[in-house]
Amino acid sequence: MKLHEYQSKQFFARYGIPIPRGRVAATASEAKHIAEELAGRVVIKAQVLVGGRGKAGGILLAKSPEEAEELATQILAMKIKGLPVRKVLVDEAANIETEIYLGITNDRTARKPVMMASSAGGVDIEEVARESPEKIARMHIDPLLGLRDYQARDIATSIDLPRDHWKVFGQIAKGLWKAYQGSDATLAEINPLVITADNKLLAVDGKMVLDDNALFRHPDLEEMRDLDIEAPSEIEARKYGLSFIKLDGDIGCMVNGAGLAMTTMDIIKLFGGEPANFLDIGGGASSEKVAAALRIILNDPNVKALLFNIFGGITRGDEVARGILAALEVIQTDVPMIIRLVGTNAEEGMQILADAEMITAETLADAAKKSVAAAGA
Image 1 (cartoon, helix red, strand yellow):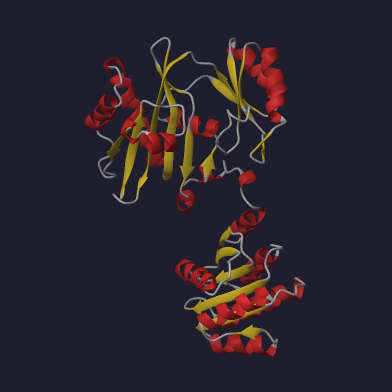
Image 2 (tube, rainbow, N blue to C red; image 1 turned 120 degrees about the vertical axis):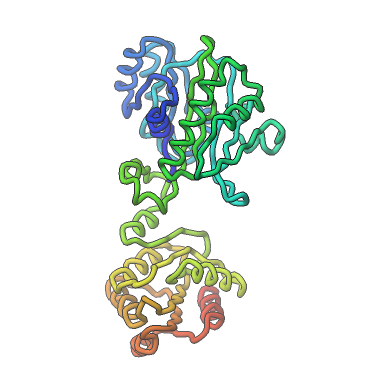
């Protein structure tokens, strides 16, 4: 789950990271009012969860409240990479002397978080890593010990930060670590962290990506979710506790278990097909949950065949079969369906489906072949 810039910076401020004065506005008149309060130059920044806002004209400088209103009107009417701009952040403009990148993410190879910093802030860090990797300083953080003072100093020296900023930089680095750890984030970055003309450090932009699997611990952050960037099918799936990701293929997949779902997608590709989705209905799936999953898959107009691959451990095969038939009583479809049931109550489930004249398969390979053939036909 991604947070908007204004949400990220508000979260950073909880941990003592200095941010510009400013507020978010949903209308041009609100933007004008905020600009009047700030009484100076302001930056109007589109709040959309994509990169390249500046290049698309979504970040503009206003020298007066009237100009702020005019620019906010312009930005709020935009779409950036297909996403509508519903809010703008009105921030006090900073007199920037130097730009720095500072961020934390997961290093899966090292199995530790890693803090990264660069004197080449204000641009895509991926571009810096590709063209000038020597400009990026990296420091792994032991999650049991946290970021130590000497590590923050080492990072500061690695990016040639003037010594008079080390103390505040250390406080900001520690604040970023606490924000990252406290929200179960997978990414927390300040780009840029700037040195202003009056020789202060200021986080003028912020970005956070949170681990969806940990959101049950953070209901306050869950409420910040922006649904504009999510497919309607994924939003619907979340209501039923389904793990669903829409893909570009034409063979729908309904599977219980993430590993089995990945295997099912792999074997579909092995036999020349393309999966239309990843869907894990989980263990103990009820007939209601199965019916909901079926509706979500069939709402995709690209789906030409549907493969069920259910292993009955906790999940009962007869419950799955009843869920399929219950959904088909409501949803009228001519999409061919291939079902493989193994495990708990599989025989009962297969009999229910056979009585309903559904296509069944005994092995996964057989099911995949039949699915690819059905989609092709």
